[in-house]
Length: 351
Ligand code: ASP
Image 1 (spheres, protein in one colour):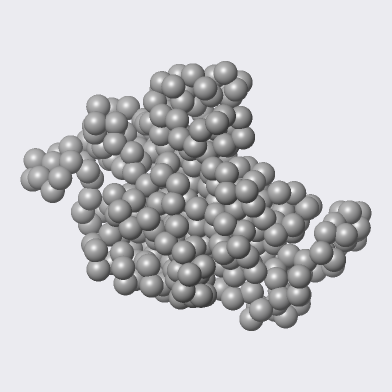
Image 2: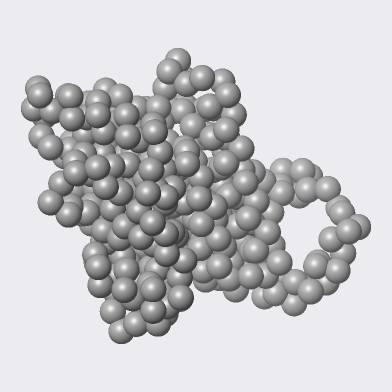
């Protein structure tokens, strides 16, 4: 199940949600906000991804599968807690992504893939659907949590996208945590680089691709009780990338987009295609100009447009009513979503 309409699951959601006495106080605090939630809209919704690619059950060790599912659930817990308490989608997205960046399982922050030169160059972006403000960083090597740098660019600079040393300097000035580039080293990503370099001997281009390719970008989209949508994405890019390449992640409208009037979107996949097809913005535009539903727009872009073009990957999206879409044209995508009383995480196709 990849498209999850809110209305359909509303009754089930209520029956699954145990009344908890210990949460009484929080319930009272948020009662005013709940009253403001329009009929037919989820009180809040959150979706996350941890990358798409050739992720197959037969190649996955059970303990690794368990670790991924636990990490996805933990990130959802963090974001959902903020939303349930009446916090902003900006904070929910930021905090869920920080958790995923700090996990070595994903290609973002700690666990980022290596460039051809053996470095970790990180990209991240965030967009506020209420104001259409956005911030992004590209190619940073010392910022522990690039999503925080993206948010700082959005809130504390006049710019949208800062790159390289300038972005690092800005992050330092903002008081963000700076780490030695060594912090991002993980043995498994280092080995992936060695395999990608060996595969390069039979050239398929300078970027890693092929049957064992996995994109591990992380992303989160949330709708809060006030009706504000935020989307954010963070990545190490693609293994063996060169020439200070960055993909769709720091490009607003390609890897990340949010508009309260339509939806929020965070993508993962072969970034060059997501840039050329302005994928995240395209979903919003199809809803805005063609009146498509979130399901129609996401299915069309991922399974028709992008697949026809040869672009592999997926996206997560949440619309203004709290409908959730988790679409991918690759064999798998680490993903999950939560709404009041509802939770689902998944890895493979056709679950
Ligand atoms: N989209 C990212 C990029 O091209 C890669 C990914 O999704 O893992 O940089």
